[in-house]
Length: 267
Image (cartoon, rainbow, N blue to C red; front, side, top):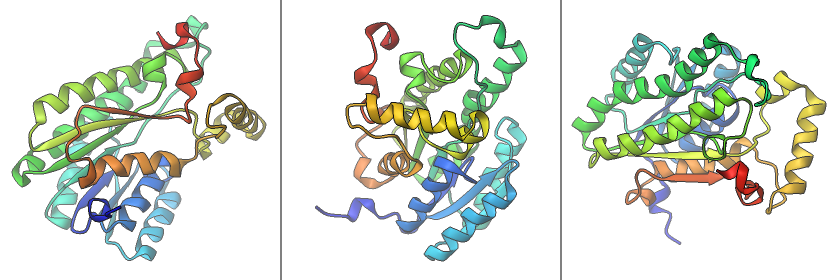
């Protein structure tokens, strides 16, 4: 099989929320394929510096930029600083995301402020980043945007109702913007299932994390629990020229979890 479409030499990528987890894995895999990568973080400076160091060890160019995607001025600055450093933006991976863990049946567990914050990062933040990079991509005549969504946005499951709804909105926006930003820019989404990241361990503890991993291995058709590298491989696929004929598409990366859900959970 030819690997021509897998190389990203000369391309410049912004990966939001790339200090840890899926974002860090995406940043490193893009760098390994020859892209220059902007590592973005909001609070996790030490972890972001570790991701940057890993990219430098690969031999790729990189910049570290602090920006909060929920703030439009930060999004525009992130795009401009990337252009100032590299002169172009070819790839945007909207990975930054947030949630609040609340049982779906607990309707009192989410405040209006929770909804605004989750949507502000997961939906509005992704839109603001796309808006910030679109003019330079249009001028370049090329752009690949990948939104890191979730199976929650398709099946109505996950950490909370607000999170599932935000990812559903992100999926809809993916289709919408794939239509209006064509032909120069492709917009796709990857929808992971459970992924064992540091965030989940910090939020729920090691024991709960381990139970989730065991549950995934038991109940998914592929008998696997997702790791950041699994999702990163799917994201990189959409970034590369091998996917140049694909836009407005979702790739479910969940070891087949969606096949095991009841019809009610899939609805």
